[in-house]
Length: 168
Length: 280
Image (tube, rainbow over the protein chains, first blue to last red):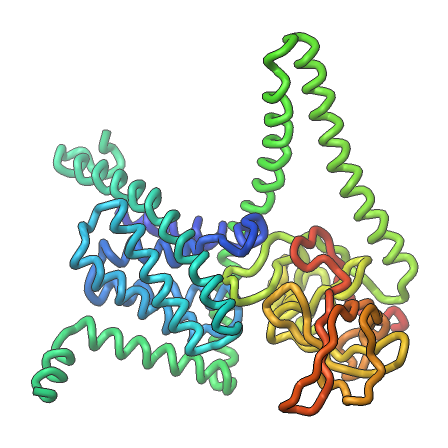
């Protein structure tokens, strides 16, 4: 329960921070925090749950933006599938692998989004998607580290019979 | 082999889930475009946005606070090493001056806004910008007024410098504004010098594109464009931009122009929503 609550809290924080980041970070290089959150958790959930998380993240992101909900759903579902697939070949809890998966999943998501809902020219898309994928890769590393720490603390607490919230 | 491969792929639950969810996404997208699920998706989108709004407001408020504290701390830190007592005093004074400069800047902006609201005949509601769009492919902002302040989708949003965009979604205490730079945005404008009419569209970049000008249209670099009022969506006479570059579209046989927006669309702080024409 603690893990689920933590995951939901991180997702809500990502959703809350996103519009402010778009204003604060220069050159449009702000990370897509909801996508990063989805990638980190999709790798951990794996299988159909990871893909479903991608769909849910897309629905949420599209709903908050208020436009092109279908394009968001499809692109994030594909990104979730990519994260699940890549997670099989890379260390599940590695910080670097989280960065790499997030970087790759961003290209998949933005590529699918461009195909479904083209809003900019190809050269501009390359520049923007490149910046976002790098930012997402960097942002995924501390988040993956944090999630790993929380999972370790909660699982250690469970082994000691203390329950997840009294894990120390 | 093909049959075995397709059977193998289809037997994987992940593949089936992927196909099902992509199909669901396509249905949602088509439904939204065709208006089949207008009530449902609109309600879901509004519910999701409303759930996320307290977070957006909290982040925006904390951002303002952090920026103020950060500004004061960095100024304090820089001069603390020389003469302790004096430099601390200097640092404090500098922080105060920096704070005052910030206030002065804000004051200037607000004075201009006030002057604009006094001179215009439009009914205006002042609003503060809480954040930008959640996606780089969409040019929009979130403002801190909503249906509680009688806002409705379609209302024009401006600053003292000119037109900013149009409200496209309203919650009780916040609203989303589609900026002029968004590709979905189109505004009918008029050249104040020659009277030529055209449509101003967003390009997802810093500049706007003026299209549907006739080849004989008298438009020159540096010309000011204002809203024409055609269509009744935007009030007439709001500054929209300045012509920066002229070109010719061979496909449509019309003249094109690149336009620099009048208002600061990259970092807007405070805006006005035109809630009425002022004449009743």
